[in-house]
Length: 317
Image 1 (tube, rainbow, N blue to C red):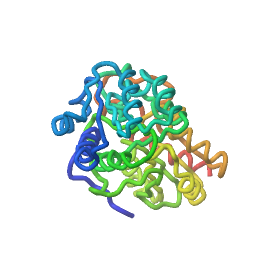
Image 2 (spheres, rainbow, N blue to C red; image 1 turned 90 degrees about the vertical axis):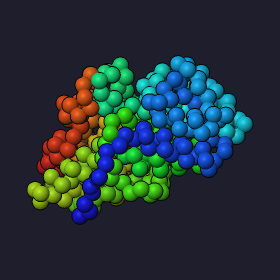
Image 3 (tube, one colour; image 1 turned 180 degrees about the horizontal axis):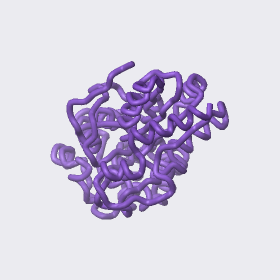
Image 4 (cartoon, one colour; image 1 turned 135 degrees about the horizontal axis):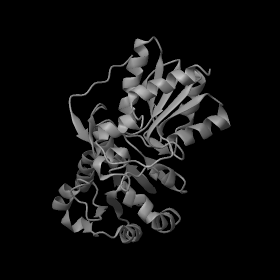
């Protein structure tokens, strides 16, 4: 059993900012666009270093997507930045028509996703974005788990041909993934080997899944933990192989249960290997104002609920 620990807490949006700055130094085709949230997206270092490659669009997110699509025609690699709510729901038509359908190489970078936006409340806490984005043809969807992985993912998507939705967050979370580890798009990561149940987790819930693994191990239950950082294209082989191995599955995500990671995993298993499955996520409700910690606990997005779901699904084997 591997032991995961951390010495610092850091927000994943800062990982994006650090990755974007590094790209600015190494790839002259990378340009950045922001919708009046430069500081919140941690894009200010790129703006300062490369002002000629930074466009402040203002509060005009739909226009930003159109400009980004146009920039790709000249060979540029545009990274757009705003809150996840404004990166998806507010501009869905522009993404569908001008980016996905048109096959444009735009990197849609979305911060402040999920409940952990916190006190800003339900109107800003988008919990449907993964579902919205993964349904669009020709769009890759990535949801890294900590600062280091977000930085690596930001760098990796610049070389990925095609539109990408990169999702990250506002709160400081444990930094537990290795620094400078290459990010392989579409390849799931087995963080813990197990035999009794598989926990497929994404984003902020990966750390909670590792905590759940420790709790279950103390009870003599061997749980496999797999980080699904790439929602689409999904590593179907890893999903099926692990489900066959353990015979029970739990999915964990900071997103609506419907349309997110849980639905996607369930579809794969229904097609290839029907398996008892339980879901940790937000169950058909909007969020509310509160601290990230309190909201995660109230809505069951924590290690305690992952353990409870694991025990339930093991009993169905």
